Length: 343
Ligand SMILES: NC(=O)c1ccc[n+]([C@@H]2O[C@H](COP(=O)([O-])OP(=O)(O)OC[C@H]3O[C@@H](n4cnc5c(N)ncnc54)[C@H](OP(=O)(O)O)[C@@H]3O)[C@@H](O)[C@H]2O)c1
Ligand SMILES: [Zn+2]
Image 1 (cartoon, rainbow, N blue to C red):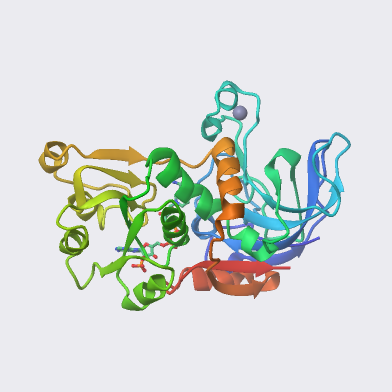
Image 2 (tube, rainbow, N blue to C red):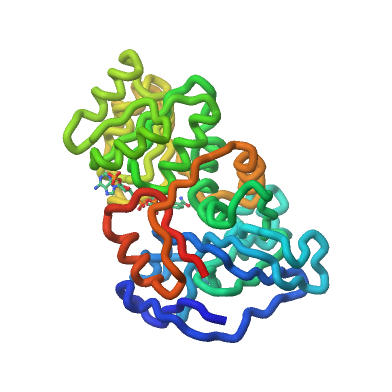
């Protein structure tokens, strides 16, 4: 098969097209002909190095978000057939350890991540356990399907599993062009919540407004906290989703109402944030870290997504052979929505 692989860390130029033996389809696996793979921040972070996920090795084929068609099934497979249109839940938990048994598979010690710590979807073929190949309904295209796993999995985990977002609440989320933000906005709106998006780019905010966002604020040129108070009748947001980290962390807390919740799940601007402790406890704020989603939550998210009529937002589409160009685009700072590679 053709694949995009790197055998040393570096810039986008280390992504090289190679020809490799087809993946082995084990007894419980399905072999998928990849139709589309989304490009994620993790792909670029690991390409630059070091490998971040436990079990990462070189050479590596990136690509956590994959959709395609089943072309072969292992001898023990019972739930999938050749011809099925599927997307991959990339977090391959073992299914039998104590963490998996108690429904906490994000903490499975045997976890391997497609495109993170084992071969990924920048390839013509990928083999995964049938348990992690979810059938895609006919009304969802495979290109759309490839954009779902990481950003919807993450936004669902943060807002629904951890944040407990409810109808009528107001969500503030930062980073207008981020895939997680776009997914969060669509989930929140469909749960009946109001949404405020912040960004450093007026252009991105204008595009976000077309997704039905209730209010926007440019945190580089305006007062983020004032703006949130203005659109919430002085109260503040019920919940903030912060994947940006230190650059906005204090403002995230300040924008919350009394007893508001800050859910944080990223560190784009650094690993360490400082904030005013007194303000946080006097206003009874709750800070919630949101880890990667587990297998069970992923399945519930998909069941919701299939009926939710979400809008796919594609930044750009590249042929597989132009994976290096797709990474230049990812790292350009201009991104709005998902980048796709198609075979
Ligand atoms: N917890 C998990 O398991 C998990 C899973 C996936 C991703 N993540 C994390 O989630 C984060 C977001 O991922 P992503 O791929 O969706 O986002 P991304 O494409 O990396 O977007 C980051 C956004 O952050 C904003 N930003 C960048 N620098 C900023 C600054 N100095 N000040 C304010 N805003 C800034 C930008 O928004 P504007 O251009 O609109 O201003 C940009 O759109 C990353 O940190 C990623 O590692 C965590
Ligand atoms: Zn396990």
